[in-house]
Image (cartoon, rainbow, N blue to C red):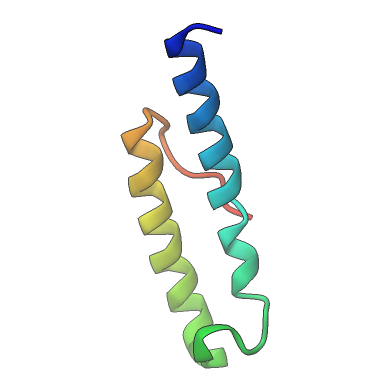
Length: 64
């Protein structure tokens, strides 16, 4: 595997893992997020995930 192939594979693994961040908001006690704040938190989480995705050349993150 070339260095470029390793880099691309590593980025794919990272992107797959951050896609699971959306599931966190479904856990009732995670980070003491109030029910009424979950929608706003989802928007902010997606925005931050997209920032990471753009570093790797993707248009946006894969949001679960």
